[in-house]
Every structure is written in C-alpha cells, then in structure tokens.
Image 1: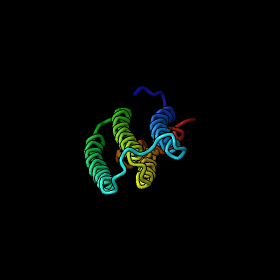
Image 2 (image 1 turned 90 degrees about the vertical axis):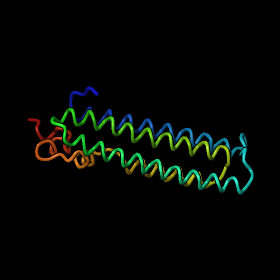
Image 3 (image 1 turned 90 degrees about the horizontal axis):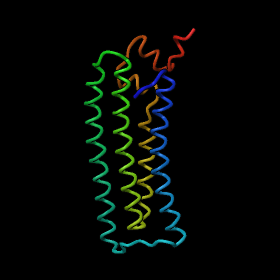
Image 4 (image 1 turned 30 degrees about the horizontal axis):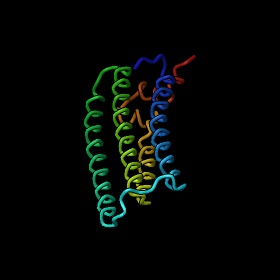
Length: 166
C-alpha cells in the first residue's frame, strides 16, 4: 500500500475496515427489515433443523475465528522481525485485510442464516460479530503492540507521525 504519511496510512486502513463493517451491517439490516415487514418469510420452519443450523453456525464461526486468529498470530510474529517500518506496515495492512474479510464473510454467512430461518439467535450472533469486529479494530496502539514496535517506531506509530514534526 502506498502512503505518504502515517495519518494517510491509518486513514486508508480505517476506511477499508469501515466499508467492510458498513457493508455487512447494511446487508443484515436489509434482510432484517424485509423480514419484519413481511416481504420475505423464512424458508426453514422445522424447529429441529433450525436448532441444528444455529449450533452448526456457532461451531463453524468459532472454528473459523480460531483458525484465522492463529494464522494471523503466526504472520504477525514473522512480520515483527522485518526491518523497516514501511515494510512492517505494508504487511500489517494485508493481515488486517485478511482479518476483516473473514469477519465480513462470517457476517454475510449469518445474514444468510437469518434469511433462511428467521431465528433471532442469528441476530445475536451477528451482534457478537460486530463486537468482535470492533474489538479487532486496528488502532495505532494495537498496531505497535502487535508488530512489537519499540523506541522511535512505536512513538511514530502511536502519534501517527506527529511526534517528529517541527
């Protein structure tokens, strides 16, 4: 990713994350609105099948998030060894993209679950995913901690480059 300052870097990073968040919320809210207005009705009415889907979705979500978390931890451990702040931030951007795309896909998966069943537990799962999305938000402090930055690099990232301006 090409950026001329740390402010621009975080601006682009936040925009990419925010677009994914708003897209997921928009799709889910549209399905929720159409369901409440009666324009669409659930396709699956069998209570045992709905319960099976609820627990299967939950298990798949937890497994997927665990795998992604472990893979990202491994990547961040490798990326923290790279020399140069610019390279580290470029690699971190790719890690954040992977993390946020996974959360987006899971959120759309939950929207599909709500569309087919109309069960309120998918709404709770979706709210949990939004909370997880916000917990994973890449703040400057989080970036410096995950990349294990020290000294001037840490100060520069936390202040978004303002500490070294005259």
